[in-house]
Length: 195
Image (cartoon, rainbow, N blue to C red; front, side, top):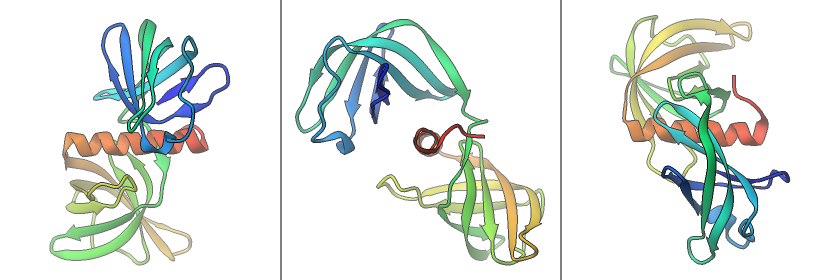
């Protein structure tokens, strides 16, 4: 994400950071918009394996075309603004769960890079400590995320009309974890800070 300062106008994209220069390949959502102008002060926000980082800089080059790119000369050190495993936000994603051979459909209540909380219409046949397979449909145009989770708690909510299952990822591909972190980050930008 590249954000023009002080206006706050934001451009999502893929950030490639070196020591002193960042190249941002703007996403297709930005087509038809002007790219940040040369010399503009900007904040770059990007995800690394251990969290969310920010750096300040200024635009030194921009190119528009099928894939717009912006070069930013960076100033100062990267600042970690969130640990990945703590960033969590409310999000309703469709999920399929397979617990000991029983398939169930549910929705997520919240999502993070470390796990998900799931809402079921009735008491699911799973218990604390049990592992299960999950398939999550993330709205990023890619294949669903497949992972294994471990149940941390099972709770009755909304006067027995819903059941909440908190879980932690046991096995998840690093690329899929990064996708979830980026998804949480996008929602955070749209709706405010994560929990």
